[in-house]
Image (cartoon, rainbow, N blue to C red; front, side):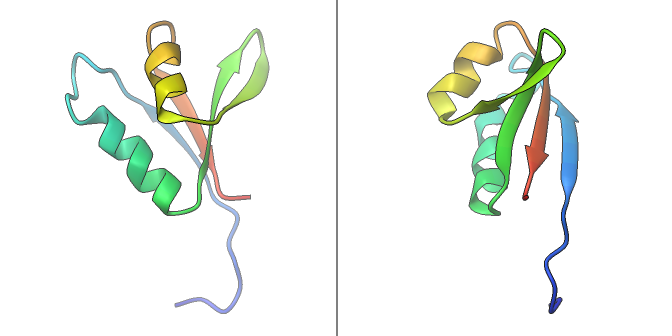
Length: 68
């Protein structure tokens, strides 16, 4: 495809109540080598597991995905 890697940042607003397949979005992004983050107290924090996604989704609907 491309000979050089592109740095990509994606911000997604997603809610469990509106998207029953929400975990699939996270799985796909992780499979594409994106790291998952969320904003807490004006700081970006990393999420390391899908179970963490479940927990963070209780209080947050905006997630950041970075491949760099």
